[in-house]
Amino acid sequence: MGAQTVTAPPYQVPIDFNTNAFNATNTSGSIGSLAGYGIDPNLKPPQIQQWNLSIQRDIGWNTSVQISYVGNHGVGLFRAIDLNQLNFNATAVCTPPIPAPCPTDTFFQDFQNARSNGFRALATPSIGTFDPTYNPAVQGSVPLPFFDFIYGGALGVPFINDYIEQGQIGQLIATYHAFEFDTGPGAYPGQANIVNWFPNPFIMGGDILKNTSSSTYHAGSVEVRRRFSRGLYFQANYTYSKVMTDFAGSQSQFQPFQDNARPGLEKARAPFDLTHACQRLADGIHLHLAKRGAVLDRVAVRDI
Image 1 (cartoon, rainbow, N blue to C red):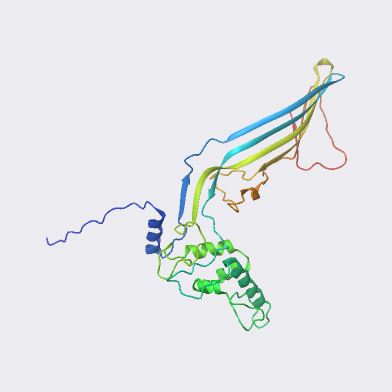
Image 2 (image 1 turned 120 degrees about the vertical axis):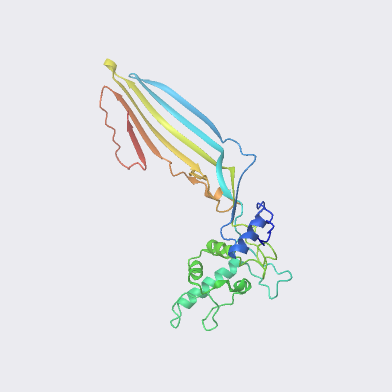
């Protein structure tokens, strides 16, 4: 019937970050929130190492006292981290065809200057608003060569100004990367980049599940047991403990490090850490425990 035969285009599944970034740029003009996900091929079951020491003595009157120490160490616990961590101290890439002039400061230095410009403008009665752009009429305002280098950095856009005023340099860089402010003129992501904020310029995040987390638990306890006549029995113990970890776990097991180069920065007391715990067991009698003086911090008392 005169219909034309159209050859079907070859079907291709994107198999690399480069292809995905090119496709996203061609369809939406930006890489947006493209990310890569993976599991370490050498992932192993986590290990828990435990140890304890107890000393028990009979002190007479059908009473015994036990002093114990218990510890454990979680090794290789599951945690998904972001390998594509941004570098806010990145410098400009000024190789051809990138035109001069080339900024010599790091982006962080120019970001700090932009904040200073903004607060100086805010303190100027004739302006009275936070404006990070260079204004020679404002005393102390300085040029921002790095922002000029990345096509002006969209300074003046309200949410961009908000990021600078609030010191959110990470969010600002993520926005610039998502909208390809770091690519060369007319180039695709990764081609002639004018600044390399991310190790992998084709994606925003590079998440991988690894054995990267650890934990420690140390506890000391004192237990008293006494057997009375007629089958009455009393037992009470007190435990002082501390749980330290760099990741308390979550449903997704994802929590990027604040700094991949220094993961130990996040080691802190776990959210489920319980400093003081008291337990009492009385068979046949009702026992009241009270503490005089200082109030115990984070105390759990359980009757059995």
